[in-house]
Picture (cartoon, rainbow, N blue to C red):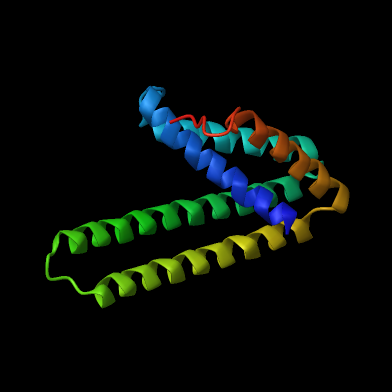
Length: 158
């Protein structure tokens, strides 16, 4: 379970980096959030290359990571869509509580489905790697995550 959280945290950190970069203005040629996300993906792929010695397994692990990233992006887009629906409904004076509840239920069900898919991908990658490779990879990912974590409570990047 801890390693599943680490993978989800890596994705969250990557997406957070993308959001923070947008506010601080980095990136050349592409949207700054996309640039930060691409840097995070490249760094994670390098971790896989360093920890997984078999090139074919490393290729498969990176493909699984890409599937996780794709699912996380899809989930983020869906979440924004639900928030937009809530904003529209909030502006409607005559909106009923049941309308809000339906959107919240749909959003929570979509999040659960996405989280379940990501968890399945995590186990798929774990089964591909040896215990030593898995421990090295998740340890390296944890160190990467710590570099991007806020330094003090309440001191986020954004």
